[in-house]
Amino acid sequence: MNTYSTSKDFPMTQKHIASFSLALFTVVLSAQQVAFEEYDLDNGLHVILHQDNSVPVVTTSVMYHVGGKDRTEGRTGFAHFFEHLLFEGTKNIERGKWFEIVSSNGGQNNANTSQDRTYYYEVFPSNNLKLGLWLESERMLHPVIDQKGVTTQQEVVKEEKRLRYDNRPYGQLITVVGQNLFKKHPYKDPNIGYMEDLDAATLDDVIAYNKKYYVPNNAVLVVAGNIDIDQTKKWVADYFSAIPRGEEIVRNYPKEEPIRQETRVKAYDPNIQIPAYVISYRTPGFRERDAYVLDMISSYLSDGQSSKLYKKMVDDQKQALQVGAFNVGQEDYGMYLVYALPVGETDRETLLGEMEEEIAKVRETPISEKDHQKLLNKFENQFVNSNSSIAGIANSLARNYLLYGDTELINKEIEIYRSITREEIQEVANKYLKPNQRVIIDYLPEDAQAN
Image (tube, rainbow, N blue to C red; front, side):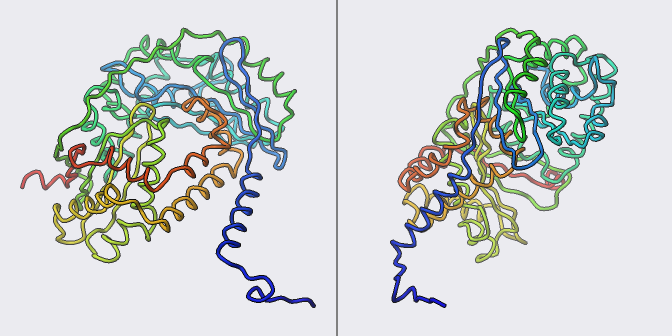
């Protein structure tokens, strides 16, 4: 048996290790390259096809460019409401039978809504691709929107609001942040909307909303998985090409004035016993390069037990039960939050001071080379994992096209993160995370209101 010693026959220097790591990562990235084809139908529907015959499944998905921000005053929450309403039934699908059809054919499906988009998808055995396409074409062309369905889904949304927001500890926190960071833009209102707006909506309001936003020229169809490209194109044409194009959608949301002075506010939650102290900032929309940098700053401050805030405030100084920082990415403006929940008698000013101290360090000095490399490794790993499933790839393709305007980001987004320097991290922190640009929120137990 041949043996060798790395210390004698093949000395592994730091240079060798770095070269080997880069070569290995290059192989991984090469393996993760996502091939796709995209084109438009005459009615404006954008179609993206991704073939992967390694597993016998297929994802059919449609993302509509409509979210919580797409509303008029007094009619909030419509996009989230439609997330539910468009499962009610269609001209050719009996009311309440949608999920039964999917499950009885070996599939699963779901939908979700943000402030900027709504996403519907099915995952089927690949021999049911035609069924998935038919379902989504039915949703787009033949939805049944009547008073019975509207009334039913109003109650469903109310129950969801009670469970996820009203009766859930810290469930209103993001809503409170949005209400205080935005004064004009629709992001000031929660994605789920206000129930009085939904109750006030007429059937004509709902029909008009569907006609405006759920049209092919405001959507992208993604088919990913074990497919035959030519056959899939034919079925896409069969099911979607006859759907009428909608009117062009013009968005002209009001711009927010810059925040130039610190604001402090209080909010109360009947479902909590421990307060949360939040430092929040308004940040750029997720298409901006600075938003990518803010993602890295969030990870540096609070992602994992070795992060700066966690190690300092939770592990070492025992001041916080929980601490975190995260960048809420949105199309027009983002929201950046740093928060802490106190341990015992730790007071508000101590927590705010400790959080600001770590943010100030990022503003004042470039992070270490070691920490920078750790961040790059983490984002490279996230990038690889994001494309590890057919459903994940379908979601990324839809999002990158519809919201970022660049489908190819599925393969090259990591290049953005890898190009971010230590100096740029410092520069962006200085640009957005200054004390005079923040809103401090004391998120308190309801009984504290009486004190």
